[in-house]
Image (cartoon, rainbow, N blue to C red; front, side, top):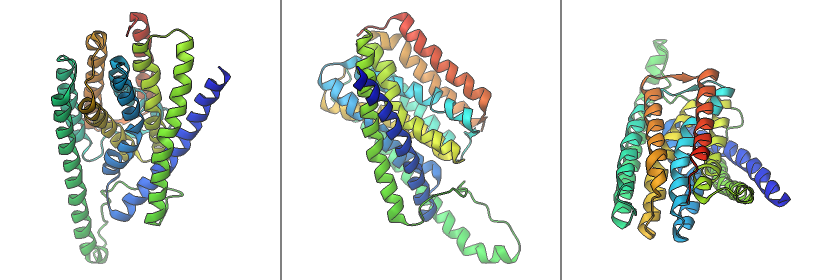
Length: 337
């Protein structure tokens, strides 16, 4: 039992460090290539922080534990919105109105609805998995086009910068990038930071989840509850670590982009890849409550982005309390595998 607690604590430490270096590396790449923080969060960071969900969901599905496979993703998406955005807001103001956030949040809502519809035709099999992966391709293509468009705009601004400076016209920094300490100047060092982050996050999540699951099992918690709470929270810790560091470093674009991107990847990549390999059974209890809470969270995030709301301590506290209330509800209702 002592080893389980050590594994849990050690995993958390690795997650925090890995989240920090991943943000530094991502911002460094954005500064050198002229890619907006939002796009970095939607792609590199989101892929890295979603790796634990893929490993766990695939393993659970192969072992016939559909409750863990689905609960892991659904619970993680709920935690991403309420906890991963809520807790950092307690530390520093987190803006949700970056350019492109609303459009991507709307896509997230649409993807959530598609996923919910597929859940009612359990098990989620090969055809459903291919549909989800096709949508993932659309998402990645759109993100790539967004980055290319931004680079062209930056080149046009650079070409006109000499004349603007002569006319004493301030140039707009639509990258949303601020000076950040310890951001690597070299692309290679930044890539090394990203690599360390991508390796450290799933590694830390592994030890965290291993310890937390053993502790929860010793307490007599059911498989479905573990999937929706302990494992979902554990696999969301990379997002939480990355977003906390982004908030501390005043990079709200990375924070909001990371949450949206991770939620999209959880539904499309994690479930899509897993379903293509093995059908996933969806527990009836998940259909009654959890997927609806996930949809409500997606809509909430879209509203925050659309209204360009800046999350402060009060709103952060409300969102964190809402997540705690959800966890309590899951236990009270007594989900069973």
